[in-house]
Image 1: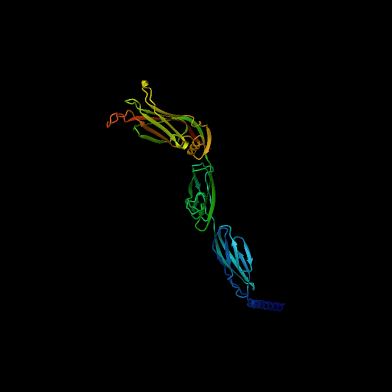
Image 2: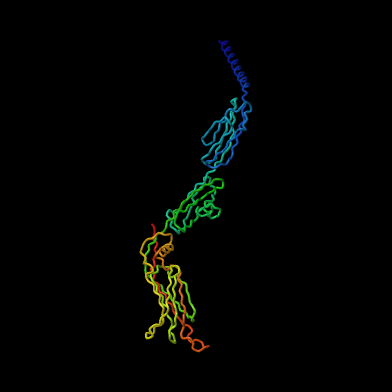
Length: 391
């Protein structure tokens, strides 16, 4: 029994020695050569949605050939190619570790790594009033715009594509303001189209086109009758002329007027002879009147009178849309057929003859001229313009 145990123990030791010996021999026959992986990427900094090129063609099989290139782009996507050249698009900002594993025909592998930085595009948040009216300065507010990496942003506003403010022939590339907030002046109603470009300084640029629809204002129109009176007093020698340019119809529709030229009492009769002229060239109006002696018993002076009625019809109450009160007034007073007297008037007073002349040669005329007063009374229909507030 003891001999049998000794014999079994000997066989176990021999088997154990053979196992170690065989393992050593197999290890000596393992001659697989590992390749060397090389990875280059360009550019290393890209923007969201851009493509990066990955190049592993400098990888070395050491022995044999490279049979596989296995790419891990770091964003959950992988690929395997038979050549060491590929590309990839990153749609989301961040830092991505790209790995390339190469394998040669002996089954050897090696890996190389690189990091791609994807810069996030700024997000534009633009706010402005929904219902601006003509004449308002509209606040354009982009101060809530953000950058994914927290970079400091720069702003470039082109406030109106319809205006070429830099004079280069293109109204869509102007820089009218550079702050996060700016004011858009609106002189007239209509659609204002412009753009905002935001830059994060790292190549991330975002542009947004905006449209601001500016509405006209509403005005209630009521009319009232008003009398405008002006007077002038002068002295004219015989043969002299006085003239004045006036614009009496700037605030209302002219209904009628009366002009009276009155001479001061003559010391010596007969009365002097003066003429009054009213001319409105733009309307083809011209009237002339000469002074006539007044009633001596009633101490009336010599006068000349020009009277005109029904020059325009009266205005009607209404509601008008316009950009400003000044525009409303122009519309009301310049309507065709209702705009008589809106253009410039010319007034003339002429001393045609002053009596009596001296009867003795070389002696001065005792009454060489005369004092006079011209009174112009214009009746107008004046619009009262009141803006209607919007809720």
